[in-house]
Length: 275
Image (cartoon, rainbow, N blue to C red; front, side):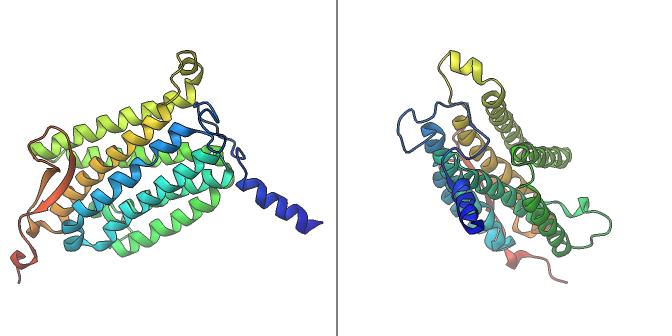
């Protein structure tokens, strides 16, 4: 009997609507197999932006560390798990969605967190990365204790990254970088406003028949990550590989007012000063 109950429990966490979270969008409105159609479809923006960013940031990653590619490879998994979660609203889908975001944040911390802000007992990035790994594993396990609180915890991590970015930008005089910072913050504020609006203002949006804010959160947050991570990578390049003479450009055309930012390296390892 214990085995039967165990099997039923495992099946339960995979079943449709086994998560305690239900977003504002009407369930099964367009398909009996997809719980939240717009939220599911909007997750596919990750599959569009992530490969482009992998391509655009490759010259920088090749010079700095190929581990940087992990950020956007894992963002593809965020999109995959987000689509699965909103398609099923299953407990497993929720946990995969949230844990993939946690590990993206962890990789970002490990690779890009400024050395000068390391705790005093940490002397190098390798040790800092191990500390981040330990904290992330503990956070991953503890996320099963109260799953409904995970999203708020993840947004707190996001706030800390935003604070770190603002602190770093106080010393920056590059007008292109400052513009990118303003755009990154504006996109993040718009994205989090959509997330909060969907979570806490659902009754209002249902009255006007516009229950799509969480889907817009997906679109805005992936663009915000593209802008913010490129800015952080640009600052990192100036600290870690200054000989590469990093600069900022936009794809597909640098003259356009909008586009995806990326780093161009005007120098290379051959121009690095040798003792």
